[in-house]
Amino acid sequence: MRTVKDFRQAKGKRLVYLTAYDYPTARLAEAAGVDAILVGDSLGMVVLGYASTVPVTLEEMLHHTKAARRGAPDTFLVADLPYLSYATLDRALRAAERLLKEGGADAVKLEGGEEVAEIVLGLTRAGVPVLGHVGLTPQTASQLGGYKLQGKRPEEAERILRGALALEAAGAYGVVLEMVPALLAKEIAERLSVHTVGIGAGPHTDAQVLVFHDVVGLYGEFKPRFVKRYLEAGALIQEALSRYAAEVREGVFPGEEHSF
Ligand code: KIV
Image: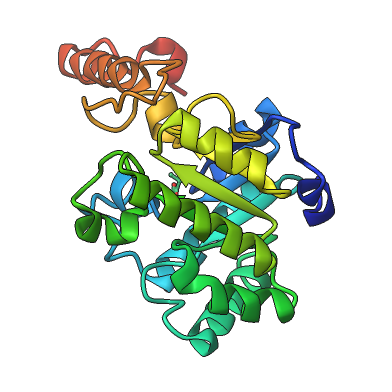
């Protein structure tokens, strides 16, 4: 199992993060040898069917973090602090305490740049490993104009860079860069000494992360441009379920070989 120290020394190492939210997918991710599992609050959308990550509660994050940990006992595991659970340092410490102690997470992730740097400092001073997240921050996507590329305008790019630097200064062990131009991600990766984890941020970040359901084709028809589908599992599963239903209706299943 990798440690926070390994991730602190991960500059340029091209590490692989993947989301997982339950026992079977975490098992598969560990068997596939990913470097880190992220129990992201994307859970709310791809597993719980919410329209955004905003409704996700700490209890839901805990429930799924515990399940993912049971599936991947030997993989570094990061859990998202859900929306507003880090609005104050006190709340952030309590939420992180539960995710680390009860959930079995190794680190927590939270969204925002300069505006959350104080909270990140408080957490890291208390000994909580923190992964930052700038660019498109889904918990506040509506304030950013939706799920859109961030940092196209120079002042926006400057704000994102300042945010990443502030997170590093506050002790974050790495920073996720979501949906920013590849050249901005490259500049940030070059300016930071901690590793950057890209999603929709081009090829120059130190590590990559994708959402499991996007990778295997389990979340609807829409595929963001930055996603590569490695499998159409949704279509395969639906096909299998239709065959099962047809065989039951036709009296083909269960057969002799399934009977006692
Ligand atoms: O919640 C999540 O899955 C995330 C990743 C997309 C980085 O924050």
